[in-house]
Image (cartoon, rainbow, N blue to C red):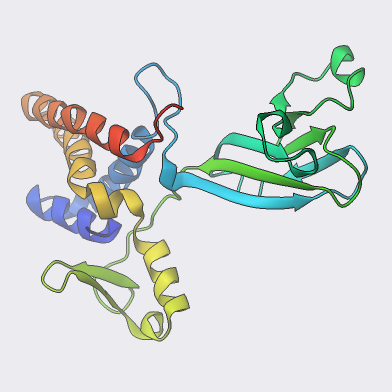
Length: 233
């Protein structure tokens, strides 16, 4: 359990390189992204990154949906056209736009266009679409220790401590946690630190320690993937 700024502080102190704080912050953010890329280049879809929403159609048989946070969007998981029930046949399939697509308007399907998705064959006006998609965690910003740091984790108390207005309500506390940490840092902070160490050692030209840190990172990574992804049905 930790926050982004605390990891950066720990690593810069560990390596006696306060001048590299910005680089270390970048390495931690990069490691978080690397944990979302599989060995074969495919995306790793973590259960904690799943977002759900319900859309209501305004046009018969079609609906356009703008991705709310395109910079974080990873992959559309499922689109269920609820007017067709709740079994397997209610789920839309991805299709490539073209002549065949135009001839099958009433078939349950969807395609992506830029930062939007188009759903076809989804029912009459007022029908609902149950949508699920994956987002990667946002890039985190380093906050210096003190009054500017919204929150930090206390190992002694096993809880967060908040600064100023960030501690006045559950809403402000949740905002502070969003600004300072994410579920990976809270559950897999040691793994992230090993990935960042490999990059710090490589930057310093210490290839032996870099390889050792990366080997540890690679050895721990499958445990995270196994624990945090859905099992195949």
